[in-house]
Length: 355
Image (tube, rainbow, N blue to C red; front, side, top):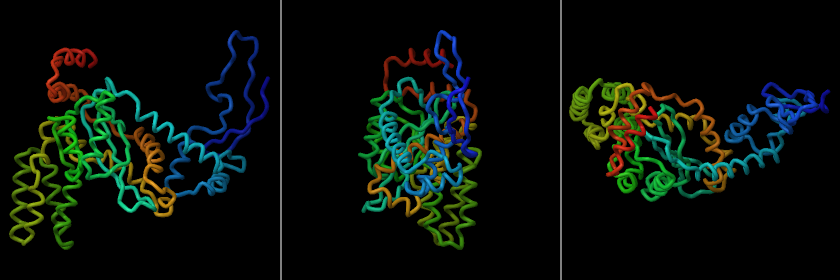
């Protein structure tokens, strides 16, 4: 037989159905397709945080989703409020999980500005994404803090280390971040790569708009040079052009911290496209920017953190895997044990056994 009729909301609307009843079994039958008490498909639950983040108020959910999913769509303002509370609890639990055995190879870091209506200072979410030995990219941290603050970043890195994160083989980030001071204290010796996207923006800011297009093309030639030597030859040409044209500040900005701009050349060429920039952090936020009206809903940045974390986990499912994952083991063995650990050889054997 069948149970009583019930409603199930899918991405295409709400349908009525009846669950089959199975009797005479030693164990109670539980449907994997339609578990008890489920009223919304997973796709609908993924839609809710997107709409909320992009500015749909709690009071508008009922009207909007009834129009999309049917009059019987079981998504009200109270439903969304409960989901938001659930996300906050999930975020708190997520950031306490153990990172032992995660085998981090690369780390991308950035501080992403969050607009909040009542905050006097610009606050940011400090985001850490890791590239793992198996080629996956995963979100490791999403914490409210201050972009240029060494102390804020120290708290993030200290927490990651206490939960078991190994020393990364390379850390990629903007040169203005406070993480570099924190990194020197918590993971000393970890190689550093400055983000070329941020560097290009900083150089172009020193130039008049009429020459920025030409300058950008020249800078791209530097970024994508096949060798460090070729990149430095292009760099020297650009600096000479800046001096001749009277844009000395732009040339000096390019030269600043140069060695950390070209660290990626020490790593496999197949990985360079991943290591030149912090695109893996920035790209998801292109679709997560809070609208002004939506931002006013958050009195403090902490209130937005769990919602944005939820969205980043959805974006994580679409992260591109690292190219040539078979070469990650070489990187991990060459750069990954630089903390003076006496058990290096044992760890090498364990890693090789896993690989």
